[in-house]
Amino acid sequence: MRNKRYQNYFKQDGRIYTCSICHSQLLRHDDIVSRAFQGRHGPAYLVDHVINIYIGAKEERMLMTGMHTVADIYCSICEMKLGWKYLHAFEESQKYKEGRCIVEKARISKEVVFDF
Ligand SMILES: [Zn+2]
Image 1 (tube, helix red, strand yellow):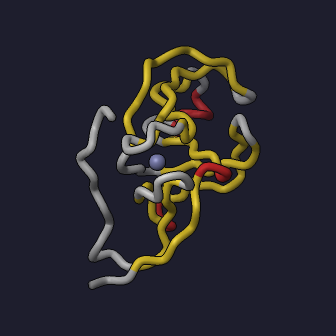
Image 2: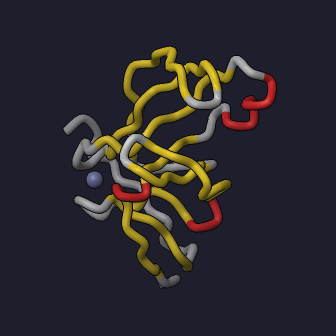
């Protein structure tokens, strides 16, 4: 394992999404910008902020919406690939995606945490 430092959202109750394999906390319901995205394995979310991930090598990738510089993102605990991060968008209309992540819906599970 590359990174065992584990962060969590305790003290912020509400709906969160966790890794479907190891149940590490990944993102909050409020971090989801759009649910209308498509990943490699089906529906995906565009998300503002994800924790407990590490970022792979950056590469230029031709996506449906044009050329982007992206890097795959992985769960830092179990190393499952979760999606990718947009580092740079070449098209002006796609700039809003920069710094945001695509997370595959099939790779996460919804959970509820309580403030304690
Ligand atoms: Zn995991």
